[in-house]
Length: 548
Image (cartoon, rainbow, N blue to C red; front, top):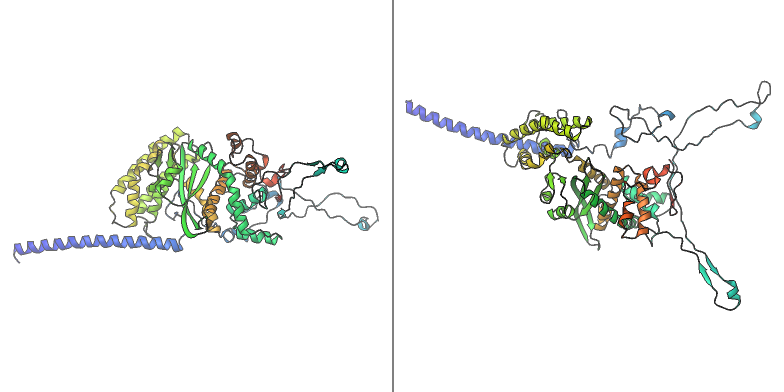
């Protein structure tokens, strides 16, 4: 072959090689995309509901694994039975490494002493016949006893008087009646008083017991309470919470940082009974980690649109930490992003056994940031120390992360492309925390606020009507806010349902301030376990909580 022919053949081969390389790149991208899809599908079907892996550490969202099969997961045939010495409660969370297998009960648990004695005819010595003397009581064992709740009917009467003298003289008898002893009622024309309504609310929303199971429970006690009636009682009772929730919103707007999230809430009918099977939204607002007032608010709306976010956070000028959802994009607040969301999208892109994939490298960088943040929290850094640490250690990692992200060019439509675009688009929101010590790296506080509702939703699945969804939001607000302020949930529900009907639907600010979960004027049964209070001075009480 001549030189020209060789040159021409070389050029043709070079072009073919270039085309083949491009084809291979496209095929590699397709394979990677398919692996991502397969991985995500397998994770959804068979995987653990957690972002943790054997080779990645994170400070990501908590896993729900074990919530519904805790009996099987926590059972241990080798665990020792607790002795009386181990039955000591600690209200604070257990320290890392502390043994969790032993049952723990509170110190002031009521005790019933049962002592056996010899019958009179056996109290003499079998050897000499002398009278036996008691020298001690020998401890044998202790057993935990359950005393079921009790229902009773409280009937209200008033005494009627008349003047017999006037009656004898043929005059109209003078009739006098005593005052009506019936206190203000949460359901004025209904069967239950506030003690029962509070109990139904707590069972459903804190303990996750659906109304159909409550119906069966009370039927077993010989009392039939229909689930429809109980649902109506919850809806009517929750309306009394509206002024309290309005006050909680006002306090929330004063906080420098709020955390927001949302989750689905299914409704089957309109309030007029028309079938809709609609997927609404439960919007969640939580005051920040360093908030003066610990508040968690749930609001039901029928959509997830921008208009809802504008309505809920109208006039708020602080910092709102959310995920990348576009509905939060406008407002007078400063929006802050969530590194856990950015990390989560990258986690979904890591194929099995690909520890050095591009997504895994990016996740490793984020994990280093979370590691420094956790160490700072553990050491209880001041705001100044936290900012200094972030500038020195985390800011360089953020720069390194975005340089790496900008160097990636994944194929359109792949999960990696989605994760990369999310990180790029959220850069401004994701870097606010570097200059503000009140802002966390993640929005996990809001997501932990969502968790109780998700767990409750697993049990009742849907709300029959939108009124029911609004009632669920109101009751969840009271329960979760009470928990954050260290209150007894049943006691606080009972207190609100006792006091608010006295004030009507338009209580004064002073009356509402006294009902706030941080108020010093709350009664003891709100601040302690309700069953711990020996004497509860509530004349309306008709459901006796067992002292167990």
